[in-house]
Amino acid sequence: MMNEQRQDVFRVADEIFRQRPSWVTFFREVLGVDGIVRQVHQTPESLASFEQTPEYQKIQQMLAKLRENDADLPGGPREPTRVITVRLPKSLHESLRAEAHDRHTSMNKLCISKLLQVVDGDLVPSEMVVTDEQAV
Image 1 (cartoon, helix red, strand yellow):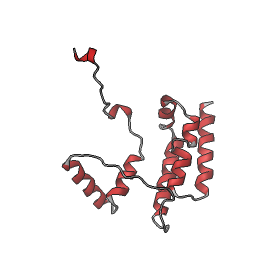
Image 2 (cartoon, helix red, strand yellow):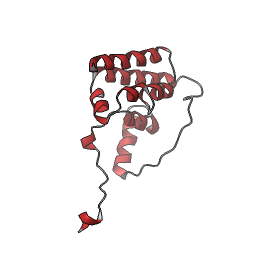
Image 3 (tube, one colour):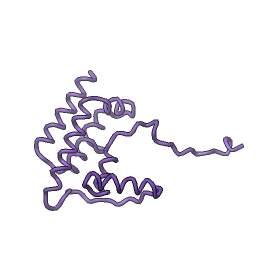
């Protein structure tokens, strides 16, 4: 059953990819909050499991290819953009700037590429909320 679901998700993603949408449209339809991946994999465990599959890796490659192609399209992405502010140490900023330079890309494109990657949950610090009982 799980293998069939993976194949179904990949088949839909491939059909969308073959239409050559913008990368933003592909992301929204396939990986976005209401995309096919989250429609099929509704629990964090199911999603994390899917993210470890060859099908998910192929979908990520499709996304990367569309991002490459979008650089050639006039007007860029066809969805409103949002701006976020991220506080980071000077040394990390310098590292990102150097990596972007080495890759001949902008920091914005590099950061978006990094944000599109799967992050192991164990590597993300959680925000600990201390209750009155725990503080005692």
